[in-house]
Image (cartoon, rainbow, N blue to C red):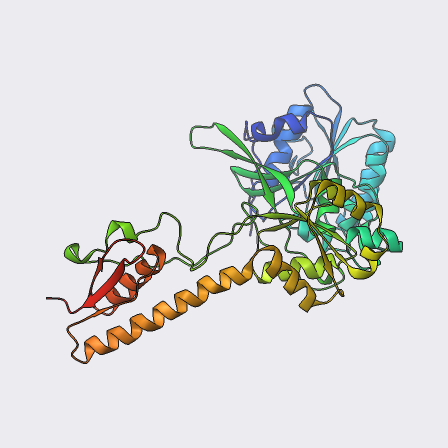
Length: 443
């Protein structure tokens, strides 16, 4: 037996009251028990103070099951639904017969309900509702409810447009304007992720570009904090054409989940020289500069996949004038299109590939990000680690100490760590650039 007691929780919509009162249609999503219905009930009560609000209450969770609506909905009117499969009919009846300014709906879950919601929105009535799913990605993958955010269709581009976008000729596009203007992902009772322009964000997802969202949170003192972040959808074209979603929340663009690194502990007398401790994280290579790339005629998806595989800080841009460099292929470059001529006049570097292949894209990225120099650094680190292992082996077999070859401070730090893990002593001697590490037995 499950008993649910509806009650008014005042102040729950303070965090989004500016959106509720803006007149825009709002869709809320989130896992069960996160507070979607509570926020709907409070939104209905607040709006009913100065607007005509009708609640379509299918499961009686908003206004209760009695003949008299629950006081928590204030002056809002309630329309009960006799059977769940009649919800779409009651939605249409509400807008046709009761002249509402706002309609509140809990749990839009069927295709007919999604179609009814579109009909209501097209008549200029503000909609506030909830739907199954946790995030925008879930709606895009749900053929029944995707119409709430505009739906998805496959379109064929012209040759020129496909070259400009750097995509295949057949791509996925948004089918229609979304039913809801704003989508709110309720992550917990005190933290919301807000898509303020659903149409724009759906377009960005379909073009594999990051979205700027608003994160609103309420702290323990009741203060509301607002921040904007760029997030990337994990959806791919394969997912959207029928595959499985792999979407997870992303904090900041470029930030990755990493395992917790173990911090080496040194005996007090054996700590490495402070000059050997670099100020930046040690990864064996120098940090790379972010490059904004405009692709003309080059497969954009291949370019993005290769950059991600190589962990390169590359941003694709649709504005050639905003690009740090331009990449195209030989056939298009020979035609001397306007975008190439303008780039040459601006002095923007242009990389020309022989063909639209993975190997050519690999070579382009290696040249653009100077990965050969990075590889030289990685080779030097490998040599140093091999030398350190050999020195540790010699000391274990009786050698009193071994002086290693001079190395940069970042590599010396790695050598100190390796000696510490082998329970050996390590000290640095000399001055730059001949400063080196000596490994010896402890005591």
